[in-house]
Length: 419
Figure 1 (cartoon, one colour):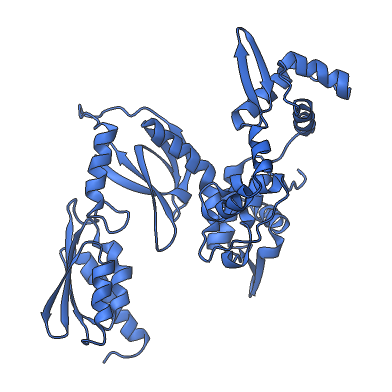
Figure 2 (tube, one colour):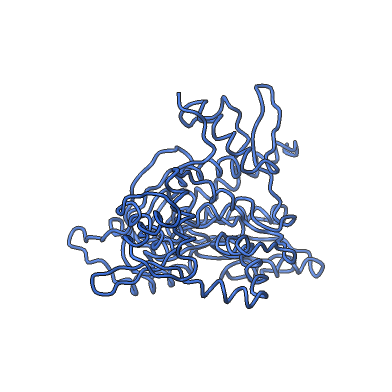
């Protein structure tokens, strides 16, 4: 039986478990459905080790639920940054990490062979040249080392110019303290702050989606694909069924919900010739892939797709570009009762939050809101905020209309106000 290890080799595996405990949480040991109960115990122990101040246990009849309770407006940094610092390593990894960086700290430029010889001469450690070269190449890809080729000779060195500049302009650390809390890839700002032993004493963010940092590695890959204007093969795990599927698309833009904070990748699927959005937290992997035409249909150019997407977004309420009943836009009409002039703010809400819909006055105290979007089903959460004022609701997508009135009847029954 293998011994428990706190560090993990695969970051995607780690982000999946942390997200489950943080976003969904509230699962007892018996309710855990991934692999074995031992897996649950191991992940729970890792969670308690990495994020112990934020782990909450709620006792229930069949044990206790584990979840993460993190209040962003009380914290000076994102605790989930710790998950980035949990990768396992071998003895050789850690030895070479410190010795190579120490050897090149003064800006010396050395080949892999020279580094190998210097490790023996200066630190009395013996490594194979190929091992040293692989480590240097890996560090060059991650940005820890720089690489320069002159003829057939390749040398490695450290460029400390940025570190020297930050040290000479210490006020930039305040900007990094803000960036780690507010921007994508905040782990970068956090790493700089740790390197300079600087803590955030100035900024707190009232509404911050800390869980986004678990998606940043994937987001970086997707943004690189978007920048190259190429296609991608996505490995997507359903948040409902747990099943994994592969989808090929042309990534175009990243959307972020202003209501939930959830992020989506909007891409064009050539097979269906439609725009589709995928939840970023459901994408397990993204790799560049050339998109081939199907049925003799020419794939639109990237710039042409962006123009088409910008046009279609004007009729998208959220992130859906297709309804469940047809492939066209749907029309919705809502009649609202407003007591004038005391409740004119309701009319203001309809105009401000209606996303392009029209608001007209039918008669005294009666207003009509009308709009045309791809999927009216996405509107229901917003529509429900007018419950008690809605006189009638009509929609060309009858399933939306039925769902609204069915939910209304269930609410009447729940509060025992129906006859």
